[in-house]
Length: 318
Picture 1: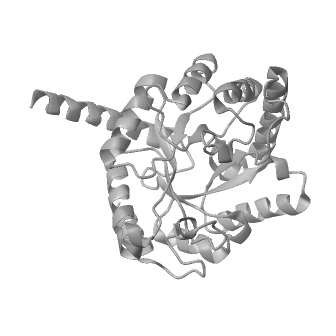
Picture 2: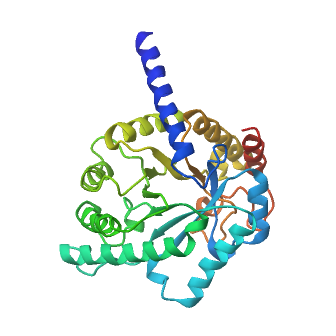
Picture 3: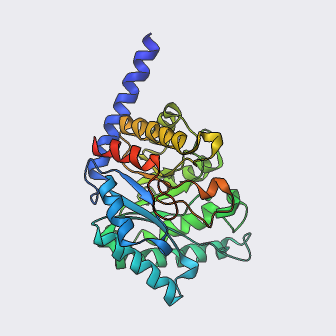
């Protein structure tokens, strides 16, 4: 019983610490609007933005790929997406990464350092263009998965690159919080993400304002443990930049999705996590399989699913 009381007190203290961060860390968010939802810039419409705002979400998340920034049509997609968000008064969590390999010689440290400096320039340019609308800039997305880290061998290439990013960003006056690095799995004892973070955070303690991760499939207790681990090991708050559940029959279909989303939001509210983004607003017809196609709170043609109704009920009750 003593151990249980101690654990409860510890969780309460961590929750209180996160609550402070929630009000101070992301000035663009109100204290009760810490949940957002992911959208795709290529099909994000004013109607979507209005419905997202009406549902009770406080922001939208979308990605920007640095290797496409030279394309004027892509630049217009980005600016149009920001304009749509602005039309509904929704700030943006912008996740920035490259979909191409950063260098053709990943074993060359100087090449990774140069790539990091170049990437940082893109971050600064984007931040200067859109800072008035930004909740935060998230550096990368799921680098601990080969699919999203095309440079190869995360354990040897990530730290040199990201250290160069942090070093390059250091002299610049950033008015937007930076979070990273959108890990596919929450950092844990001995994990590759923890090893990388230990080096980056110790060498560049002012680079990040929070550690972001994606706790797909985790229970409330597991998320609580992840939050405690992050706070204790890196002295930064943990935030959830992506979480969702597909409406597959194995998950109980549309109703099962709604139930799981409701449980997740309730758990996160209790933990007072400063920022949480749900994946995603609409089903994706372009998904590679049935699972990837059915994460939406709406169908791909904009019809509400039970999950949207459940989310709206919970968020309006905050």
